Image (cartoon, rainbow, N blue to C red; front, side, top):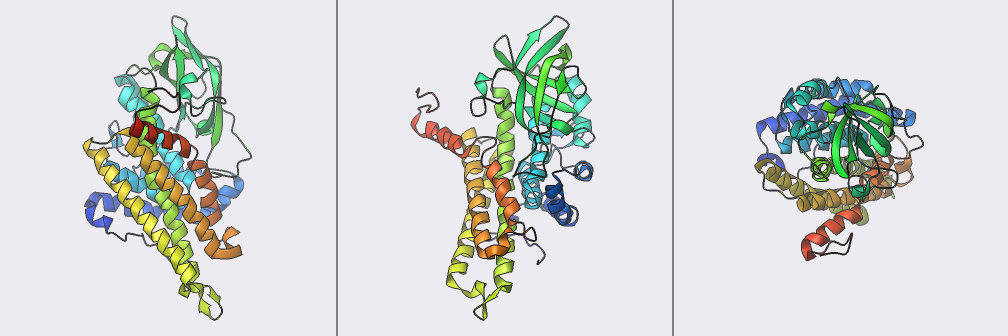
Length: 391
């Protein structure tokens, strides 16, 4: 396949700083050299390569927008570009970095004690320690407020009981930020690998995100020292603030998958000869490529503007819902149209199409399903909470 060239029809690059372009190009080059040649085998074997964890830490892209404690303190636009390039390689790669930075490091950085920050963040920023985020439960996904995982105050420690499900990085994690109810109030707890009563079995049999570790977290009278509760937040504001950062990253990451599929479709269409002409010369194929260009360009402008609003602090959560929902939706449809352009060859692992398509089916569901984000926007428009039908 032809070397990848970023799609930038509206010259978004002219709006980037030199640092942002340098970081994007650094991650892009690493993905081309270290990820794409190995990703299909990693998916076949169902593994996330440890060398990727090490490389991401060495390149200083974990917890990208966080400042201090060994974190790089990059702009949110730079973080978005990192997510874009990682997901161009594979959604599982972006998921690893997203969970590490936005879901595990961020709550410690924002809500943790000084001691917690100094203990965990430098090791997580370097990639030495892996983190995960425990919110979703077997019976409570879109409705986390009804979680049943509970913490009890036992005087000199907390006792944690319950289970979490669909946890990226869980089995390989050294640190889990787990949300549980203490006296009926949701609080965040730091659980370490090896804590008594804690286990994290890997979930097998996935047809999606195969190069990503997905796990259960099980707590059976799990003892947590008193100094491992996050002191700075109570209620759902804590986990939701983490999810907003992760969903923002997804809005960029999905564009990476879309661009990978567009690049493959364009290259294939120019080289595939039918009826004595490349199929790229036919109107139907050109219409599909033009539609992909249109949707990716709109998604880029959406993500870029949201990134600048994140940087200057003028964003609000519904804007993130729109970007995540839209960009994943168009990326999945672009993968399907790209598969159509490739014909039967589109199902082969010689091309990235089916892998991206399968991954995006999960990305469309996790961190707020497509329908849930529509309801979030519906509440913003009407003032009526459709989850409970209350104003």
